[in-house]
Length: 316
Image (cartoon, rainbow, N blue to C red; front, side, top):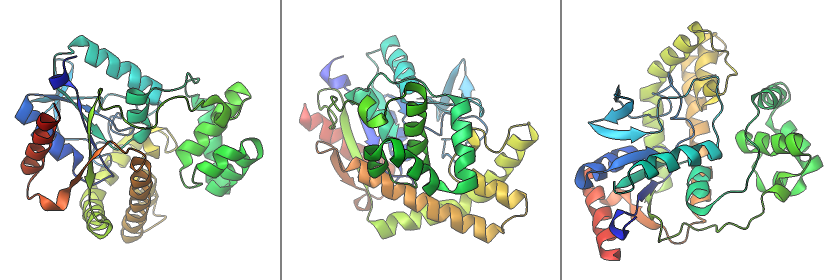
């Protein structure tokens, strides 16, 4: 791949504007977008996962006539992990390595795996994950974290108890291999994003401003999220299936079942999303080479995209 075709990475916390800026950048450079989002892969739940509106054309999902890969293709009953992300992404890139690709998303483990390398770990086991999720549902998330501490104190200390997906993955690895995740993950791969493989940009918002964006988005998407949840259940999907574990759908289903009010559901989703954004910000601090774009300084996504494109040209 030539230096001027090194892919962009538009990273940042939820609600930071990654999709809009990525689309603006794609229009400027004739690029295609690869979603780096563990939830946008699912069908039927596009609103809550902030999947860009688009349609399928000849096997390619397009938004504003721009190819947008790795969204809206996976059944809600299926699991998806970093290894699958890397495999599919490699195929997309290899198919035409002269295209300008733009990675956009907030799933740090995916970008870390693709650009920095990953350990060869066993794939997800849906039965084990369902069992562990049921335990968390019954006994609380702290219970699983305590179980993890019994067999892998290092992972339990490093993974926040609230990050249920990472806690479950660590326990799952132990059940599959008999070895702690902290042993299986060798740490031999670099923590930083390699500048010769990707031009990376982090979208920064001050916390109060980002919280405001999260709150507004939560209010705007709740009603269509409820309809998506209703439709998924009507199609026969169980509420504990992998796709419906995406942030906010548990609360939408609780509202549908009459367990909580609309106001309670919206507030809960808002709080959970803020907590998720905080974890994302913590993750991205590891990347010392990433360019920081102060989003408050730009009126439009087009303006921000032009700045990113200028930065890349200056770096060549």
